[in-house]
Image (cartoon, rainbow, N blue to C red; front, side, top):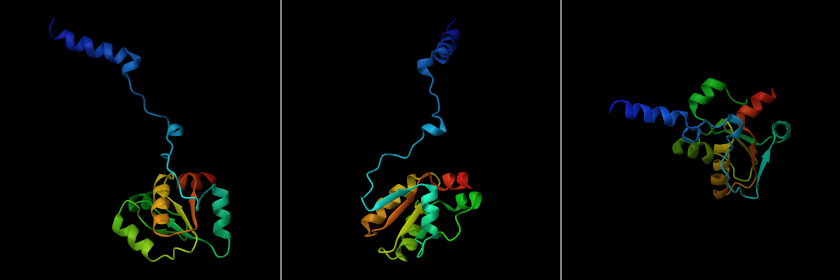
Length: 141
């Protein structure tokens, strides 16, 4: 009887819906709330594409890790600035002119938001974020 008690308790916990945790759907996952500086504009894919066709085009920064680029590719003309690697990020950003426009993207948009905040603190004044990141870019074709 003593062996049945723990098994019965586990069975009851599994059946009780208030004890189960369900994974959020991908649509429910949103970038964290982050107060972006006023100089940062979030652009939809079509707006970002138009900006990249403009003359002069902004510097395009890919903030993803190397394995992400290997797996998914990147937007042509982008500069790799791995946001999760402080040395690589600093080296890439150190070569840029803070007065020139810069379009940031990552996989979904979260790293781009944090990078925009960091770049704004470094004096970058014309920052743009690709809303939805590379995933939105690829979905748009």
